[in-house]
Image (cartoon, rainbow, N blue to C red; front, side, top):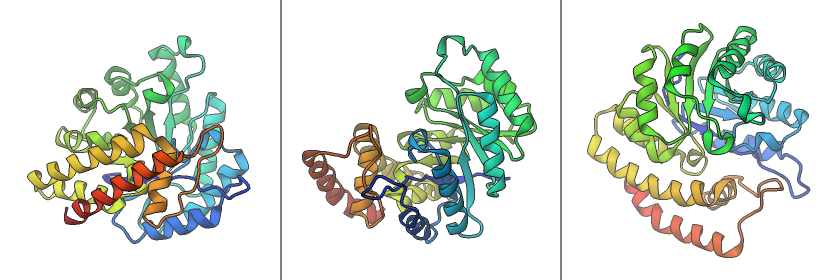
Length: 298
């Protein structure tokens, strides 16, 4: 199972009454099908999964599966605080015919989550999951990072096929590459670190930025793959600026507003997250206007 390439970390659109808008989600996926994205992640961090009910999660899994073009790889976020709930979510993803699950670290009882605890958790999940497991390290949200030592141990499990590392720490990615076998697939979740991470052995990336700029995120991967390194570095510099404002500073609300500006169904985030205020919208819209010519030339 090959997860090389660029994946969109799908957003979850909401209707004016606050409910999940599955028709808008379908329209986004249908439009993404026209790009060369390798696939999609449903119920990830960008998808506001921690703010959804189980019924809403099932609706999203079904809609993405039904809308995705044949050949697009599908991953489902399945991490939960308890091992039992995580296993249950992996089984739900399997029932919807997803290719693999993305399992973040539990984090609420942080002081207790020593490396041996995390290793035992992921091994148990991988033992029980009907489909392959990809580890998910996103310390900026969880406060817990998976390091090369524990990842190398977990890579020995036949059902743990890779990791999404969203730390943005290129040295940490390099250490994981060095500590794991060649078959272990490493994807990054930071748009600012895609090019250097590919250069040291990452297979691709899962990006929030790809929700608004899918073609350009794919172009960066393709330029690297084809050996056009100077052009890849130029495009990486453009995407660094876009990601810094849209994702790092403005968060999910920024990604969704940028999607709106580019013809996708973005909308507003779910409370307690807040939409952008007027000045933030103006700043992002103006930035996209200056970015577009450079992006289109890339």
